[in-house]
Length: 464
Ligand code: SF4
Ligand code: SF4
Image 1 (cartoon, rainbow, N blue to C red):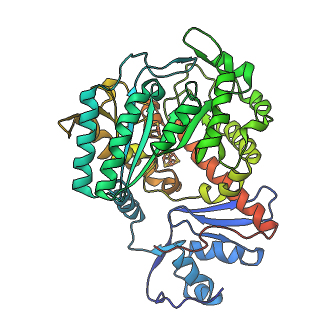
Image 2: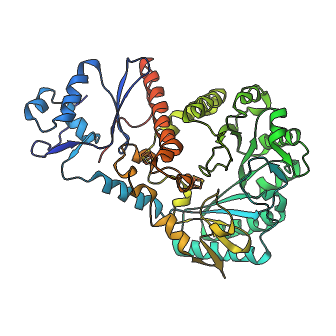
Image 3: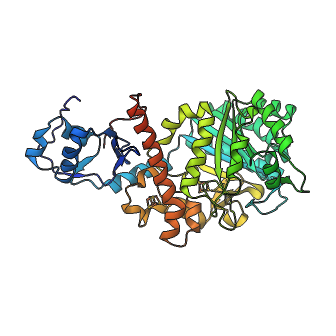
């Protein structure tokens, strides 16, 4: 490595709070990862002792001089930081920048809170409510005002529910108007839909794509027999055959078809059988795992009892699904290791979910009227005190997160899950274990590539 010309001689340094040393399972590869900068270094056997001593005594001049190329790289990558730096403040800064970004306007719309299915684990209360004409007018006016005020590069519209296709008429009328608004304001328009797929036929798929809805997510719960016991119609009739047809149709029309496999301990063994089905795969299909836990959150559902996964079980299943999907296998590394400014879209200032009665929500798993963070009237958003909880009090600003070395990759985890955790033990079980296991899984993958001398994607060095 080339020596870097940094004026590091007079500075006093300390090791970063966010260094994470990872040893591969076979014990041959040792990686040093910084969860704040994203820097990753392979520590060779010859440098191992030196690097760990330098991290303990970074201001020892004789030690710095012994291997002159290593010290500047440790500084430049953020493994060593100036004594005066409060790294947590930099995390706060990154968080503020991220959540207050005005680059995009993201709206999740709930045209229907009703659903045609009765999944055994559904967390949403049965409500036969739909967006009224007044709600639609309000939403369009709100969008126009937002675009005028913040001039976003892109407008993202997600159709969600209940089951959104129960009110295709609302999707059509609003989408046509959104397209006009975006054309007039020169904002890019993106749209996708999350549906159970039961009502998707050829004509609907064509229309959705005409309306700029190019990506679709459809959920399955396993092979036919297992799926039908978990995702049935209101009258108990099975849904698998029809949803399979919808997926086959969707593959012909949409840019991306995300087939989400909802899983918990009860159906995890059966998922292997589902993955044998050829019709799941294609150039434009992706498979993802939806985790059903005993907690509300991670865009997951609430499941009574303790059929939720442990983090270990989840990652076994995750790997199995990703390995089956070649497209995802290629992407998984770059997607996997990342530093975050926030955990999810619900924490962003410019992200809103709008439903019947023009109520506004933040979290996709908390869509009951009592979770509303405000209301839109004549195109203006009137927030209530619940919005403050989401935006002003980041969940990572408490212990144990404030002093956790995984904070920059976790950012406190899903706020909705956190609300359900009674104590630190539950937090560790429901959030921390997943964050740490995720990082270990990605680092193990990096180590595997290194041992096979395959090129690594991602940053090798980063800067504070
Ligand atoms: S807080 Fe975010 S990640 Fe968690 S369930 Fe809600 S939208 Fe999903
Ligand atoms: S939730 Fe757990 S892993 Fe995440 S930052 Fe907090 S203590 Fe760390």
